[in-house]
Amino acid sequence: MRKLVLLLASLVWLGFWWWWYTCKICTTCGCNKAEIVAPPEIQKESGPILFNFNDSIALIQVGWPAYRDSISSGLDKNQIIEIEGQYLAEEPNISTFENMGIARANAVKRLFPDSLQNKIKLTSLQVMRRPAMVFPFLASTISTASSIEKIEEVGDKTLIYFKYNSDQRIHDDEIENYLTKLAAAQKDSRSAFNVTGFTDNKGNEAANLKLGLHRANAIKKYLVSKGIDADRINVKSMGESGPIADNTTNEGRQKNRRIEIEIIQKQ
Image 1 (cartoon, rainbow, N blue to C red):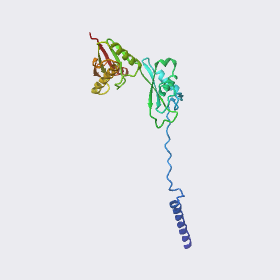
Image 2: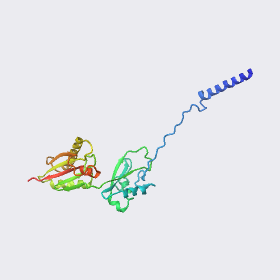
Image 3: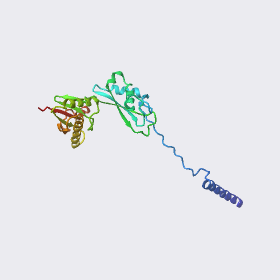
Image 4: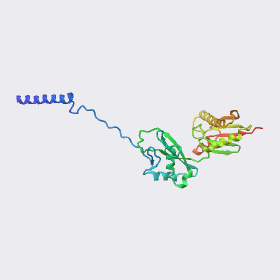
């Protein structure tokens, strides 16, 4: 019995020192190795249309036909389709367009029926690289917007419309051409300009009054750049007062975001 106890004690002693040697000294047993954590898998971007880097060829995905049809069928006569093409600063422009964003937007435009081509507006946006931007990537957005006129002449006044919460003139060749021609026609006259800014009723009343003045000053700045003396241009703001349309609808609010130009002829 004593021999058995001594044998068991010897085995325990040998096992302990074997463990100490392998795990604490030479670390060959693997019990002290740090657990290797796999990096999180990046979820690739998905969408109806994708693009490769340095390329403007639209890669049609499975859901595109249904997505296109949902936009086309829901479009009414007062709406247009806006397609925004995105691009990275490091992408060389290998297209004949202004940038790769417009080239990509145009590629998406060609996927719509011929009957809608004249109701599609193209824009572009330079974006930063996103973590999930594994090529091919999502480089376009499609939305609908009201096709409200950008310029309207009502009686002796001209109305120019602004984007939501913006004090910048809508960047559009039609508006710039209109203001350029207006300045050229009145440059050598003695007429004065009354420019009044308006907003919709969203937001704080005091902030809207300030926003309306910014809009009026944006038009004044453009007219001055085209040769109209600054002292001939009077600016003021009406803010959210003086609406010309229903502020409870998107279309009405868009018409209320405007400036009015009135030319006062002087003898």
